[in-house]
Amino acid sequence: MRITELLKKDGISLNVSVADQNAAIDELIRLHDEMGNLNDKAEFKKAIIAREEKGSTAVGMSIAVPHGKSAAVKQAGVTAMTVPGGVDYKALDGAPSKLFFMIAAPESGADTHLEVLSKLMGLLMDAQFASSLLKAKTPQEFLALIDEKENEKDGKRNETASEAAKVEGGLNIVAVTACPTGIAHTFMAAEALELKAKEMGINIKVEKDGSGGVKDALTKMEIHNADAVIVACDKNIDMGRFDGKPVVIASTKEAIHGPEKLLQKAGANPKVYHHAGTVAASDDSSNESFGRKVYKHLMNGVSHMLPFVIGGGILIAIAFLLDDYSIDPSNFGSNTPVAAWFKSIGGTAFGFMLPILAGFIAQSIADRPGLAVGFVGGALAASGATFAAPGGDIPSAFLGALVAGFAGGYIVKFLQMICSKLPQALEGIKPVLIYPLGGILMVALVMCAINPAVGALNAWIAEVLSGMSDSSTMLLGFVLGAMMATDMGGPLNKAAYAFGLAALANQNDMGFMIMAAVMIGGMVPPMAIALATIIFKNKFTPAERKSGPVNFIMGLCFITEGAIPYAAADPIRVIPSCLVGSGVAGALSMLFKCSLRAPHGGVFVFPVVGNKLMYVVALLIGSVVGCALLGLLKKRVEE
Image: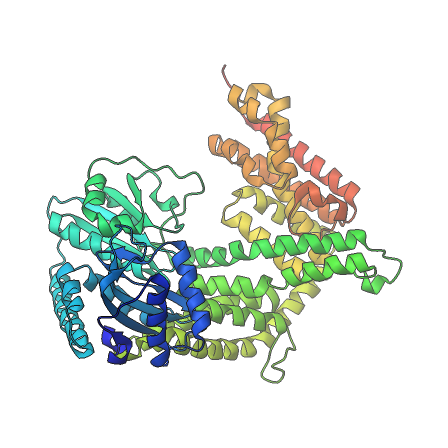
C-alpha cells in the first residue's frame, strides 16, 4: 500500500494560518471529516488529545504527526497541512511546527496503515524533502512530491536488500523501538537509527514494536551475537531477553533526534543490563523441535488462564465455606445470599478459563490475529456447540479448548499464507476482515465437528475416574504428586497441574480429589527440605541450613520452586527424595478422599478442603518421608 492511497488531495490544506495547537488539531480533523474518514469528530478529537497528553507528537524539525486510534474512525486515513508561520505544538526542540500529518486509525484495524506510516516516517527524516513539501503550491504538487520520494525510497530499499552482506569488522547492534500507540515515533526512531548506522558503517537490526504487533523481531541468536543493544522505547517491553548484554536505554525522541549519539554510546562499552525478573527467552523457534513449540504455545495459554482460574476458583471455594449445606444440598454454594454472591462472581471469572486458554494458545501461534479466533473457539468448547445445536449441547471442556487454541492458531497461519498472494492494495483488509471472519468461521466448523467426540471422551474419562477403586485412585494420586515434585515448575510439574485444573473444571467429587492431590504434591518438596535442614544438619551447608526454614513458608503457600536451589545443588539425591515424599502425600490424599475446590492457595485454602484433618496428616507424612530419604541419601557435608 502506498501513502497516496490514504492521503488524497481533498485531505491537504496548504499555507494555513492557525492560532494555536487546538486550532491546528481542529483543522486536520475537519479534513478527515470531509474525506468521510470519521463517524464522530468529537470522539476522534478526544483520542487525539489523549495521545497528546502522553507526550507531544511534534517530532521536531518543524514536523508534527498527531495520531489516534478510535472507534470514531470509519476508515484509516491521513490528512496534511502546512503552516508557514508555524504554531507552538510543544515540540521537543522548542521550534514551531509547520508541516502536519494527522493519522486516523480504526480501533480494530491498526494494521491497515502501519506500512504506510512506516514509509511516511522514513520519508520525513529527509529534511530536504520536508522542506520541499512546505514549499508546495497545490495539493497535487504536494502529492506528486510524496509519490516521487516514495518511488525513490522503494528503489533504494530494493538495492540494499540485494546487498545485505554485513560490513566486515563493523559493530553489530540490535535495537528495539516502541511508542505508546505504536505508530509514528516507533517507525521514525527505527528509520533514524538504520540510516545513521549505515552512514557510520555499523551493522544494525531494529525490532519495531508497533500497534499491529512486532515487526522484524529479534531472534535469540541475533541478541547473543550483538555487541550492544539499544532500547529506544516509551513503553514497557520484554527486557528479560537482554539480560547480561550491554544495553543503552533511551526514548524514541532521543533516537529520532540523536541517533548518532546513541550509536556511539552503544559502541563505547555501555553498562551491562541485569534483569530483576524472570529472564524470558526471545521467540527464536527456527531450531526448536515441534514438541518444544507445542509446549511453549500451551504454556502461553496456561499462564494467561491461571489468574482467572485461581481468582475465580478461590472465590467459589469461599462460597462453599460460607454456605449452609443443610438448606438445600443440591444448591450447595448458593443457598445464602452471601454465598451466592461469591459463587456468582467466582463463576464469572472461572468461566473465562477456556476462552482465555484457547485464545492465548492461538495468539502464541499466529500473533495478534489469532487471539479472536482462539477466544471464539474456546467459548464454543465451553458451550458445546454442535451443528444440530449451535447454542450448546455437548461441552468439550478443557480438551476441547486445547484443540480450539491450536486449531485457531494454525487456521490463521493458513489464512496468512493464502493471503500473502493477494495484491498489495488489499493488505489493509486482512487483519480487520479476512482473518477474523475466515478464522472464526473455520474454527466454528472445527469445534462443531469435534465437540461431540471430545465431549464423549470427557464423559468416558469422568466415568473411568469415578469408577476407580481405592488402590487405583491412590496410584493416580501418587503419580500426580510425584510429577509435581519431579522438575518443580518444569514441564512435568505443569502437566500435572494442568490435569488438576481440567479435573477441577468438571466440578465433581473426583475432580476435587485430583486437585487436592496435585496441590499437596507441590507443597511437600519445600516442607521436606526445611524439615531435613533442621533434623539432618550435617547433610547441609551452613548457608543451606540458614535458608532452610524459609521453605516451610514456601511449602505452606504451595510454592514448589522453593526447593529448586537444593535440587540444583544435589539433584541425584534431592529430586528422588522429594518425588517419593510428594507421591506418598498424593496417594494418601486420595485414600482419605480429601477434596479441594480451589486451584491454588496452599494453607490459606485449607478451610475449604474436604476432610481437612486427614489432608494435614497426608501432608505431614509425605514431608516426613521426603525428609527421611534426604537424611538417608545425602552425604555428610564437611565443614
